Length: 170
Image 1 (spheres, one colour):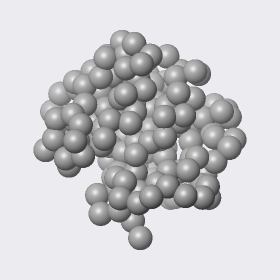
Image 2: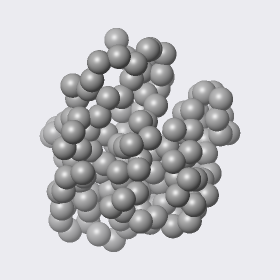
Image 3: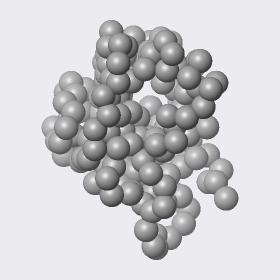
Image 4: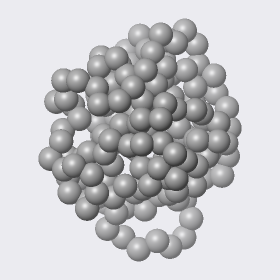
């Protein structure tokens, strides 16, 4: 069963892995900040974060619907978006003119004819960083036990770099 609001806190190791291979401006927007899992790692790396979420998980500014935002709050985004709205989140970041944005998503996000038409055909990601070792991402309302069975990757878009996609492993 999916968590009601798609709240799946990001393991710190996932964000650390991204920061070891990608660089970001000193200011990053986290528009689905949840409990601050990503932002806390970014801040340890000296990156200031602007944190918001539609729902209240005890971190950041709550009641903010990213899809209704009319101006970008930073030139970079790093987030683990609600999966069911991920395509819309990415398109919205592109429309807002965000310079660089990274999204933690299931590897199966590469699939789908509708997603291809609405996103990849016009705006393919610059890079997809596949986790060699599967991540374990738990629902925000459950106890951690066992190990992951879902393949994840960081999908990275950069404004103006919509020609071809590089795939790498982390």
